[in-house]
Length: 429
Ligand SMILES: NC(=O)N[C@@H](CC(=O)O)C(=O)O
Ligand SMILES: [Zn+2]
Ligand SMILES: [Zn+2]
Image 1 (cartoon, rainbow, N blue to C red):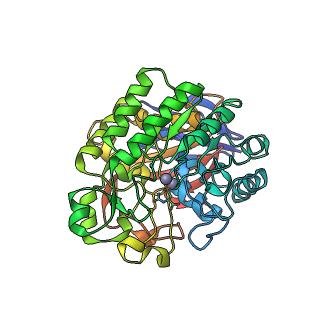
Image 2: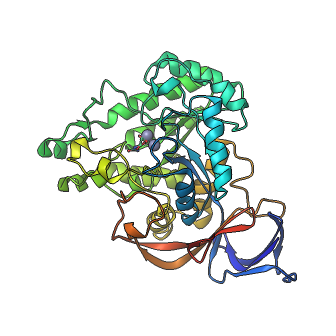
Image 3: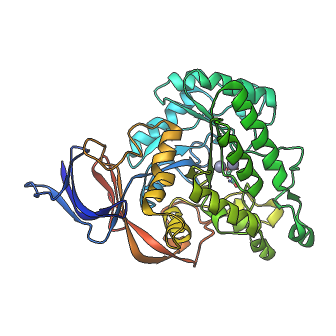
């Protein structure tokens, strides 16, 4: 199979044609169209390596009413992704080799993006006994990232053991940082003046920061790698910045929503904006943007968290945590970081593709656009503006925090190993 992408601006810079043959980039420059090749007119479009999401909830097995591996893969492709890491908080939990292989195999069967299972750190996400980390790694699923996401690995001894264990095979623990003794079981938003006025139990930024601080010290002690999931406070950024200056092997991600949305949205008690970690004040948002721009935060990860209507449409305190993200992430990051000049398209490719692929150890993803690299590609129209319609989503869920909002930049085409998964903004097949 041959595809020629004509006139794309590679990483937003000079325009070139790309020839992809049998899934691999075979030529870059001024390409003569071979007979029988599919031709894609990419005039004015920016070519990026296919996006990689370090943090996706696909809900299968267990909550196929909210999302499946297939529909979540479709949402990812529409968003320009060619790989996603599927979080382990499913039912059953991904805490065995068999469970990881099942997620992996369903991803292969869907065939829309590479679905890389994340393994649980502890059995049943209970925080006590380590899950089958080694067996999950050695399985067909080749698990390298482990997380009890949604639950913090709160016990320092368990976290230390997990870090020591994954070090042996170059794995990483992705921590949902939240000290449970500071974040009570009913907490549902950022603790501050507003939570007091609204009468909502809140949890403070320091609940996140103390775990980030503890974990970077454990990473230093063990010589292992720790990844901080969805960083949400300026204090966490300071700790990560310090840890990196000391040569500690820490990486961090931020979500698109934490780059824009702030805690004052809660005044309307709309559970769409209930998310974990919670939306924070302006000062935190400003610190997160600066940290993403200067490289302290390595990656953008969606934390795509689909929920069925009957789990979300409740009083704020009772509603499920989480919001959709896969289909809109690129437009949000482009609008908030690239459009105002805080980052270039090459920077966006780094934080949404290259770095996440490196953190997750996905060798075929996040590669530079060069001859010999797999044809994993996203073509973006930087001049398009989009208005988000939650009902136009290919996700099974509708908990979309961006409904009615407009952004700059739209994903036009996505290619997985040379095969179009999205063409002209529409799923193929
Ligand atoms: N992000 C969320 O608000 N919810 C996640 C769990 C999590 O990532 O904490 C979920 O599984 O719904
Ligand atoms: Zn989480
Ligand atoms: Zn999550």
